[in-house]
Length: 156
Image (cartoon, rainbow, N blue to C red; front, side, top):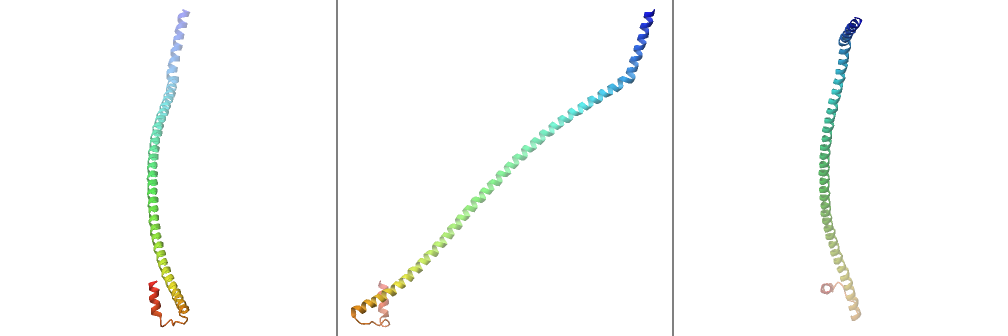
């Protein structure tokens, strides 16, 4: 009977041990496991959310870069057009200035030609008088023959 009482004593001890474990040890362990499982689930959810946020941020960055490139291209095009317009404006201004300078130079040349003709005609008149004096060996009065000299100058 010792064997039966020992077995019965072991069963009672085991039952008390199971009851004690279920009452005092098992709930904190289950709670710790549940808390750990909850933290792991939260960590995984946070990692997935961070991954989605990263993908959204990358998309936003790609869109912003695309917009920036388009804006830069528009600015460059506008600057090129403005530069071409400035070049054309400068060319037109240079043409106008060249025409003005050419007209002024033509006017100066015409004035110089007129002055040269006047100087030349006065010198020719003096040469004609000197030549006539030498030919005739007498002095010709310039005032008397001024009309005659003017006609001779016009013919020359």
